[in-house]
Length: 313
Image (cartoon, rainbow, N blue to C red; front, top):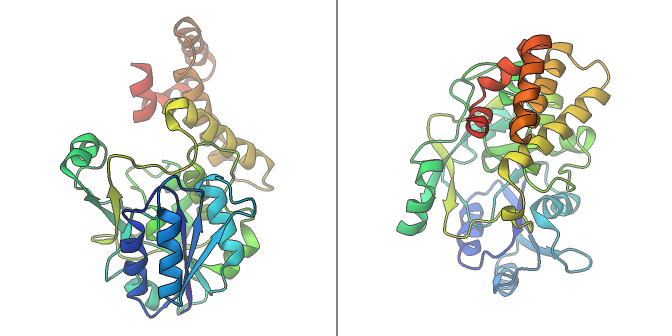
């Protein structure tokens, strides 16, 4: 295996060395592609030193040396990647020694286009744990049981009951399949949830297989200043960003030829549910009354969605 590890770097001077070294431990890692995204800290200098020290570490910036966000940085890294497989690693996260154990076996089968595994949590400080424990706890981010590839897309969309989640840090993809079916990789016009939208499309087009699900293959690093993109997420209500996410998924699905009708209806209902949840109070209840009368299933699909319930009630 020749694996290209893609790492966008922004404001990560404290963590990027650990991330890089965690990937260098694997002989299968052919290269680590760092895309420095105009960090305000000393991350660029540290990346330059890492690239000088390690032959497998390759450093890039955007052509204008500007800040374009994690999605655009991942897209650029994919253009530069020359490995047969693509793996992802955020600059404040790190791989564990079992990261590619399942992949080495599964990718011997040419029908396997991607493998996903579980990731854990590492709190860099007590303050970070205090701030974020309610979100992450000490839980694995994982799919709860092994599923056939044909069920992964429905599971990602919340159609298969208690499916669980996988993170981009626990994902490895056959590059030939990615190049052929997903271009661009990340849709950079989305302010938030670029990786979620990507994982939706990925699980539709590619046959993804479960790797290690009962223990972490990487750790999400949680600190006081976690930041995924250049966008100040405080400017965008998380609930509003969900409306934009499902709108993007809906627009894609509606244009896709021979898209399964039951899945399309589910996506449309999810989009509608978040729109209702984020409407002004009187309009919100008017929309609910309307759908209770003419489209009860749409409201029901939203009322049983935890994010929708939280926004509504």
